[in-house]
Image (tube, rainbow, N blue to C red; front, side, top):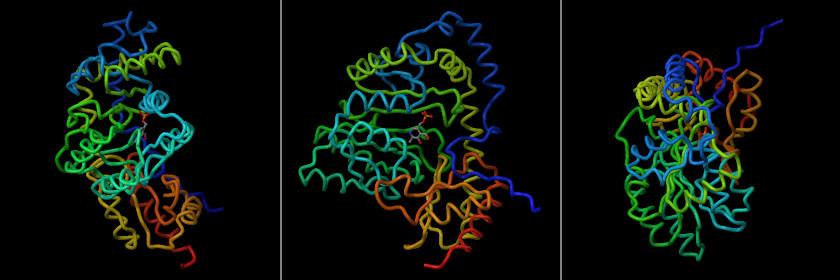
Length: 366
Ligand SMILES: Cc1ncc(COP(=O)(O)O)c(C=O)c1O
């Protein structure tokens, strides 16, 4: 009997174990437990472990009162939506966007208005057109850097225009930015949070993509009153987030391991993204994509009429996992799919794309 090919997953937006600083985390845990056992092992408060909150506040040039540290940024998103989104509130989302955000906003009964994502970020004129039609957004959810799923980055021009638009029309921008540190080419752009003069932006980020996802530490930066409201929701939900994890991350950030970890991850991601781009160009020439400047993802569009659902199944038979484009849109995306290169080495990428090309060849034409 022929043996099954080893599975290769382009599906999970998670780092492979070889780029996680396990020894650094062990050392950070030792140091954190010795330095502050009382703070580390007690319940703490819902705003998070105070030294880490202070570190994050300093990084973003805000007061600690503007920051709450949560169990991953998914938890921050959930609190934010609970605080702000009532049934039928209009929420602008990118098309395509992160599937879990769509699910979360839908479960709140939000009136979702998808606006096209372009290679330089969301189509600002699309949001302007909605407003001109009398739509009054409450919130715009935007993933500015190396977007999930597309890998695209919002230009500086558009960042400025969006902040102005939010100010003029009284809506809040939710800047969901877990990939910001993972730029491997080009210049880092300022956050919309830093460009805003008033309270137009709530910002979320995470240590999942730079340290490791299992640590479950993320955070929200925003207007003090909103953060205070969210802190109350957090108290009622879990008293406090995981202090042990936050204390370890605090030590990891302050002793220099964080900066080193980011470098390790970026070097690997650059190599993987390049290998993926080259393999696609060579093996699946009809695939259209924009080479990412950072982050975890590459979005592939195939010619119109291509059935990415059939590819998903044919790829699975060859031991390759991808995510269908339709998972990231309310409508459309049938000819698209997302490839995550964060969890696979260069050799696996080459082998995975060869199998994907073979799967594509096996599909009926048209
Ligand atoms: C855009 C975006 N927001 C939020 C998250 C959730 O991250 P966390 O692990 O911090 O909950 C992800 C994870 O894939 C993401 O891609």
